[in-house]
Image (tube, rainbow, N blue to C red; front, side, top):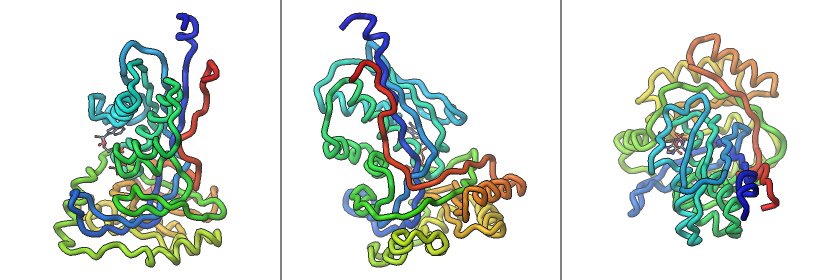
Length: 311
Ligand code: ATP
Protein backbone atom coordinates (compact mmCIF):
# COMPACT_ATOMS: atom_id res chain seq x y z
CA UNK A 1 0.00 0.00 0.00
CA UNK A 2 1.41 3.42 -0.94
CA UNK A 3 1.71 6.29 1.53
CA UNK A 4 -0.89 8.20 -0.49
CA UNK A 5 -3.45 5.43 -0.05
CA UNK A 6 -2.64 5.25 3.66
CA UNK A 7 -3.12 8.98 4.04
CA UNK A 8 -6.56 8.82 2.40
CA UNK A 9 -7.88 5.83 4.28
CA UNK A 10 -10.60 6.66 6.76
CA UNK A 11 -13.66 4.85 8.12
CA UNK A 12 -16.36 6.76 9.99
CA UNK A 13 -18.93 4.95 12.13
CA UNK A 14 -21.88 6.27 14.12
CA UNK A 15 -23.51 4.44 17.04
CA UNK A 16 -26.56 5.57 19.03
CA UNK A 17 -27.22 5.93 22.73
CA UNK A 18 -30.12 4.07 24.34
CA UNK A 19 -32.94 4.45 26.77
CA UNK A 20 -34.33 1.51 28.75
CA UNK A 21 -38.12 1.72 28.35
CA UNK A 22 -38.30 -0.91 31.03
CA UNK A 23 -35.53 -2.20 33.27
CA UNK A 24 -36.18 -5.03 35.72
CA UNK A 25 -33.34 -6.17 37.94
CA UNK A 26 -33.14 -9.67 39.39
CA UNK A 27 -30.64 -11.41 41.66
CA UNK A 28 -26.92 -11.59 40.96
CA UNK A 29 -25.88 -14.71 39.10
CA UNK A 30 -22.74 -16.75 39.88
CA UNK A 31 -20.85 -14.53 37.40
CA UNK A 32 -21.57 -11.57 39.74
CA UNK A 33 -23.85 -9.83 37.23
CA UNK A 34 -27.50 -9.15 37.91
CA UNK A 35 -30.07 -10.99 35.80
CA UNK A 36 -31.93 -8.31 33.86
CA UNK A 37 -35.13 -8.09 31.88
CA UNK A 38 -35.13 -4.95 29.79
CA UNK A 39 -36.66 -3.30 26.75
CA UNK A 40 -34.13 -1.13 24.96
CA UNK A 41 -34.80 1.63 22.46
CA UNK A 42 -31.89 3.14 20.49
CA UNK A 43 -32.18 6.94 20.25
CA UNK A 44 -30.80 9.54 17.85
CA UNK A 45 -27.97 10.82 20.03
CA UNK A 46 -24.88 9.54 18.26
CA UNK A 47 -21.28 8.80 19.14
CA UNK A 48 -18.96 9.02 16.16
CA UNK A 49 -15.77 6.98 15.83
CA UNK A 50 -13.32 7.59 12.99
CA UNK A 51 -10.53 5.12 12.20
CA UNK A 52 -7.40 6.47 10.51
CA UNK A 53 -3.93 5.07 9.82
CA UNK A 54 -1.44 4.94 12.71
CA UNK A 55 1.63 2.93 13.68
CA UNK A 56 -0.06 1.55 16.82
CA UNK A 57 -3.57 1.44 18.29
CA UNK A 58 -4.28 4.86 19.77
CA UNK A 59 -7.20 7.07 20.77
CA UNK A 60 -8.30 10.69 21.04
CA UNK A 61 -11.65 11.84 22.43
CA UNK A 62 -13.51 15.10 21.82
CA UNK A 63 -16.97 16.48 22.60
CA UNK A 64 -18.54 18.42 25.48
CA UNK A 65 -17.83 15.86 28.21
CA UNK A 66 -14.56 14.47 26.81
CA UNK A 67 -12.69 15.47 29.99
CA UNK A 68 -14.61 12.84 31.94
CA UNK A 69 -13.63 9.96 29.65
CA UNK A 70 -10.72 7.70 30.64
CA UNK A 71 -8.07 7.63 27.89
CA UNK A 72 -6.09 4.66 29.21
CA UNK A 73 -6.44 0.95 28.58
CA UNK A 74 -9.88 0.84 30.24
CA UNK A 75 -11.41 3.05 27.54
CA UNK A 76 -14.06 0.93 25.89
CA UNK A 77 -13.24 2.01 22.32
CA UNK A 78 -9.59 1.11 22.86
CA UNK A 79 -10.54 -2.21 24.45
CA UNK A 80 -12.77 -2.98 21.46
CA UNK A 81 -9.93 -2.30 19.00
CA UNK A 82 -7.47 -4.44 20.98
CA UNK A 83 -9.98 -7.27 21.30
CA UNK A 84 -10.66 -7.30 17.55
CA UNK A 85 -6.93 -7.17 16.78
CA UNK A 86 -6.25 -10.13 19.10
CA UNK A 87 -9.24 -12.08 17.79
CA UNK A 88 -8.27 -11.66 14.13
CA UNK A 89 -4.48 -11.74 14.60
CA UNK A 90 -4.14 -8.23 13.15
CA UNK A 91 -0.94 -6.36 13.91
CA UNK A 92 -1.94 -3.12 12.15
CA UNK A 93 -2.38 0.10 14.08
CA UNK A 94 -5.29 2.52 14.03
CA UNK A 95 -5.98 6.01 15.30
CA UNK A 96 -9.51 6.09 16.72
CA UNK A 97 -11.05 9.53 17.05
CA UNK A 98 -14.14 9.42 19.27
CA UNK A 99 -16.57 12.36 19.17
CA UNK A 100 -18.93 12.08 22.10
CA UNK A 101 -22.50 13.36 22.14
CA UNK A 102 -24.03 10.85 24.59
CA UNK A 103 -23.68 12.05 28.21
CA UNK A 104 -20.83 10.35 30.11
CA UNK A 105 -21.89 8.08 33.00
CA UNK A 106 -25.49 9.15 32.28
CA UNK A 107 -27.19 5.76 31.92
CA UNK A 108 -27.42 6.07 28.11
CA UNK A 109 -24.49 3.72 27.42
CA UNK A 110 -22.18 6.17 25.64
CA UNK A 111 -19.10 4.10 26.46
CA UNK A 112 -20.80 0.97 25.12
CA UNK A 113 -21.78 2.87 21.95
CA UNK A 114 -18.10 3.80 21.52
CA UNK A 115 -17.17 0.13 21.87
CA UNK A 116 -19.76 -0.94 19.28
CA UNK A 117 -18.66 1.82 16.89
CA UNK A 118 -14.95 1.03 17.38
CA UNK A 119 -15.52 -2.68 16.66
CA UNK A 120 -17.28 -1.88 13.40
CA UNK A 121 -14.81 0.88 12.43
CA UNK A 122 -11.75 -1.33 13.00
CA UNK A 123 -13.37 -4.29 11.26
CA UNK A 124 -13.92 -2.14 8.16
CA UNK A 125 -10.59 -0.30 8.46
CA UNK A 126 -8.50 -3.45 8.83
CA UNK A 127 -10.65 -5.31 6.32
CA UNK A 128 -11.15 -8.20 8.74
CA UNK A 129 -14.80 -8.51 7.62
CA UNK A 130 -16.19 -10.49 10.55
CA UNK A 131 -19.81 -11.64 10.24
CA UNK A 132 -22.26 -9.64 12.39
CA UNK A 133 -22.81 -12.60 14.75
CA UNK A 134 -19.09 -12.82 15.49
CA UNK A 135 -18.91 -9.06 16.08
CA UNK A 136 -21.92 -9.39 18.41
CA UNK A 137 -20.11 -12.09 20.39
CA UNK A 138 -17.04 -9.87 20.80
CA UNK A 139 -19.39 -7.01 21.72
CA UNK A 140 -20.92 -9.11 24.52
CA UNK A 141 -17.51 -9.75 26.04
CA UNK A 142 -16.86 -5.96 26.17
CA UNK A 143 -20.01 -5.10 28.10
CA UNK A 144 -23.65 -6.07 28.52
CA UNK A 145 -25.03 -3.09 26.53
CA UNK A 146 -22.58 -3.32 23.62
CA UNK A 147 -24.47 -5.96 21.55
CA UNK A 148 -27.64 -3.82 21.61
CA UNK A 149 -25.78 -0.77 20.32
CA UNK A 150 -24.51 -2.82 17.39
CA UNK A 151 -28.05 -3.83 16.42
CA UNK A 152 -30.05 -0.78 17.61
CA UNK A 153 -33.81 -0.33 17.01
CA UNK A 154 -35.94 -1.91 19.78
CA UNK A 155 -35.08 -5.15 21.57
CA UNK A 156 -35.80 -7.17 24.66
CA UNK A 157 -32.62 -7.93 26.61
CA UNK A 158 -32.30 -10.85 29.01
CA UNK A 159 -29.34 -12.46 30.78
CA UNK A 160 -27.05 -9.53 31.61
CA UNK A 161 -29.09 -7.52 29.07
CA UNK A 162 -26.88 -8.92 26.32
CA UNK A 163 -29.17 -11.72 25.07
CA UNK A 164 -31.30 -9.85 22.56
CA UNK A 165 -34.63 -10.49 20.89
CA UNK A 166 -35.71 -7.80 18.40
CA UNK A 167 -39.10 -6.27 19.20
CA UNK A 168 -41.60 -4.76 16.77
CA UNK A 169 -42.16 -1.05 17.21
CA UNK A 170 -44.34 1.26 15.14
CA UNK A 171 -44.02 5.03 14.89
CA UNK A 172 -41.51 7.49 16.24
CA UNK A 173 -40.99 8.36 19.91
CA UNK A 174 -39.84 11.86 20.82
CA UNK A 175 -37.70 12.33 23.90
CA UNK A 176 -36.29 15.10 26.03
CA UNK A 177 -33.29 14.11 28.14
CA UNK A 178 -32.36 16.03 31.28
CA UNK A 179 -28.62 15.65 31.91
CA UNK A 180 -26.50 16.20 34.99
CA UNK A 181 -22.82 17.05 34.68
CA UNK A 182 -21.98 14.66 37.53
CA UNK A 183 -22.79 11.14 36.41
CA UNK A 184 -23.68 8.18 38.57
CA UNK A 185 -21.43 5.14 38.77
CA UNK A 186 -23.33 2.10 37.50
CA UNK A 187 -21.71 -0.32 40.04
CA UNK A 188 -22.55 2.12 42.86
CA UNK A 189 -26.24 2.23 41.80
CA UNK A 190 -26.41 -1.58 41.68
CA UNK A 191 -24.79 -1.76 45.16
CA UNK A 192 -27.49 0.56 46.47
CA UNK A 193 -30.13 -1.59 44.77
CA UNK A 194 -28.66 -4.71 46.47
CA UNK A 195 -28.66 -2.99 49.87
CA UNK A 196 -32.33 -2.02 49.58
CA UNK A 197 -33.50 -5.15 47.74
CA UNK A 198 -31.74 -8.19 49.22
CA UNK A 199 -33.86 -10.80 47.47
CA UNK A 200 -35.23 -9.53 44.14
CA UNK A 201 -37.34 -11.89 42.02
CA UNK A 202 -35.97 -13.19 38.71
CA UNK A 203 -37.30 -10.77 36.03
CA UNK A 204 -40.44 -12.11 34.40
CA UNK A 205 -40.70 -11.30 30.70
CA UNK A 206 -44.48 -11.60 31.01
CA UNK A 207 -44.33 -8.21 32.76
CA UNK A 208 -43.17 -6.64 29.49
CA UNK A 209 -46.11 -7.87 27.40
CA UNK A 210 -48.24 -4.69 27.81
CA UNK A 211 -45.25 -2.49 26.86
CA UNK A 212 -44.41 -4.66 23.85
CA UNK A 213 -48.06 -4.50 22.75
CA UNK A 214 -48.07 -0.71 23.10
CA UNK A 215 -44.89 -0.49 21.00
CA UNK A 216 -46.35 -2.78 18.36
CA UNK A 217 -49.51 -0.65 18.26
CA UNK A 218 -47.44 2.55 18.00
CA UNK A 219 -49.21 4.08 21.01
CA UNK A 220 -46.89 6.63 22.71
CA UNK A 221 -49.46 7.35 25.45
CA UNK A 222 -49.52 3.70 26.51
CA UNK A 223 -45.73 3.40 26.18
CA UNK A 224 -45.33 6.49 28.35
CA UNK A 225 -47.57 5.04 31.06
CA UNK A 226 -45.60 1.78 31.07
CA UNK A 227 -42.05 3.18 31.39
CA UNK A 228 -40.42 1.42 34.32
CA UNK A 229 -37.05 1.26 36.07
CA UNK A 230 -36.23 -0.99 39.05
CA UNK A 231 -33.12 1.17 39.67
CA UNK A 232 -35.30 4.25 40.26
CA UNK A 233 -35.11 4.19 44.07
CA UNK A 234 -31.38 3.43 44.13
CA UNK A 235 -30.59 6.29 41.71
CA UNK A 236 -32.81 8.69 43.71
CA UNK A 237 -31.14 7.61 46.96
CA UNK A 238 -27.75 8.58 45.49
CA UNK A 239 -29.04 11.69 43.73
CA UNK A 240 -32.15 13.01 45.56
CA UNK A 241 -32.45 16.01 43.20
CA UNK A 242 -33.74 13.60 40.56
CA UNK A 243 -37.18 13.71 42.20
CA UNK A 244 -37.58 17.35 41.25
CA UNK A 245 -36.37 16.80 37.67
CA UNK A 246 -38.89 13.98 37.21
CA UNK A 247 -41.68 16.17 38.65
CA UNK A 248 -40.85 19.10 36.37
CA UNK A 249 -41.07 16.87 33.27
CA UNK A 250 -44.31 15.32 34.53
CA UNK A 251 -45.85 18.74 35.22
CA UNK A 252 -44.90 19.82 31.70
CA UNK A 253 -47.19 17.08 30.40
CA UNK A 254 -44.75 14.29 29.53
CA UNK A 255 -46.49 11.07 28.45
CA UNK A 256 -44.10 9.28 30.78
CA UNK A 257 -40.88 9.96 32.64
CA UNK A 258 -38.16 7.50 33.60
CA UNK A 259 -34.57 7.49 34.81
CA UNK A 260 -32.47 6.12 31.96
CA UNK A 261 -30.60 2.92 32.95
CA UNK A 262 -28.59 3.56 36.10
CA UNK A 263 -29.15 7.32 35.77
CA UNK A 264 -28.88 10.14 36.39
CA UNK A 265 -30.25 11.14 32.96
CA UNK A 266 -34.01 11.70 33.07
CA UNK A 267 -35.89 10.65 29.93
CA UNK A 268 -39.23 12.36 29.28
CA UNK A 269 -41.47 11.16 26.45
CA UNK A 270 -43.23 13.87 24.45
CA UNK A 271 -46.37 13.77 22.29
CA UNK A 272 -44.42 15.16 19.33
CA UNK A 273 -41.01 16.55 18.42
CA UNK A 274 -42.33 20.00 19.35
CA UNK A 275 -43.57 18.76 22.72
CA UNK A 276 -40.18 17.11 23.42
CA UNK A 277 -38.57 20.54 22.82
CA UNK A 278 -41.08 22.06 25.29
CA UNK A 279 -40.23 19.38 27.89
CA UNK A 280 -36.52 20.14 27.46
CA UNK A 281 -37.24 23.87 27.82
CA UNK A 282 -39.24 23.23 31.01
CA UNK A 283 -36.35 21.29 32.59
CA UNK A 284 -33.89 24.03 31.61
CA UNK A 285 -36.15 26.83 32.89
CA UNK A 286 -36.66 25.10 36.24
CA UNK A 287 -32.88 24.87 36.66
CA UNK A 288 -33.08 21.18 37.58
CA UNK A 289 -30.55 19.92 35.01
CA UNK A 290 -27.15 20.98 33.69
CA UNK A 291 -28.08 20.46 30.05
CA UNK A 292 -30.77 18.93 27.84
CA UNK A 293 -30.95 16.95 24.63
CA UNK A 294 -33.86 16.03 22.42
CA UNK A 295 -33.87 12.90 20.30
CA UNK A 296 -36.14 10.35 18.71
CA UNK A 297 -36.21 6.59 18.52
CA UNK A 298 -36.00 3.87 17.54
CA UNK A 299 -32.95 4.28 15.30
CA UNK A 300 -30.42 1.91 13.70
CA UNK A 301 -27.41 0.53 15.55
CA UNK A 302 -23.72 1.11 14.76
CA UNK A 303 -23.30 1.83 11.06
CA UNK A 304 -20.43 2.74 8.74
CA UNK A 305 -21.03 6.25 7.38
CA UNK A 306 -18.02 6.62 5.16
CA UNK A 307 -15.05 4.52 4.23
CA UNK A 308 -12.84 6.07 1.59
CA UNK A 309 -10.81 3.75 -0.50
CA UNK A 310 -13.60 1.24 -1.11
CA UNK A 311 -12.84 -0.80 2.00
P1 ATP B 1 -23.35 1.95 31.68
O1 ATP B 1 -23.24 1.42 30.27
O2 ATP B 1 -22.40 1.30 32.66
O3 ATP B 1 -24.74 2.12 32.16
P2 ATP B 1 -23.33 4.79 31.44
O4 ATP B 1 -24.22 4.78 30.26
O5 ATP B 1 -23.91 5.28 32.72
O6 ATP B 1 -22.70 3.38 31.64
P3 ATP B 1 -20.91 5.58 30.10
O7 ATP B 1 -20.76 6.95 29.55
O8 ATP B 1 -21.05 4.47 29.16
O9 ATP B 1 -22.07 5.64 31.17
O10 ATP B 1 -19.61 5.35 31.01
C1 ATP B 1 -19.53 4.60 32.17
C2 ATP B 1 -18.08 4.63 32.63
O11 ATP B 1 -17.30 3.91 31.67
C3 ATP B 1 -17.47 6.03 32.66
O12 ATP B 1 -17.58 6.60 33.94
C4 ATP B 1 -16.04 5.80 32.28
O13 ATP B 1 -15.21 5.70 33.40
C5 ATP B 1 -16.01 4.47 31.57
N1 ATP B 1 -15.66 4.54 30.11
C6 ATP B 1 -14.83 3.72 29.48
N2 ATP B 1 -14.75 4.02 28.17
C7 ATP B 1 -15.54 5.05 27.95
C8 ATP B 1 -15.88 5.80 26.79
N3 ATP B 1 -15.36 5.54 25.58
N4 ATP B 1 -16.76 6.81 26.94
C9 ATP B 1 -17.29 7.07 28.16
N5 ATP B 1 -16.99 6.41 29.28
C10 ATP B 1 -16.13 5.39 29.19
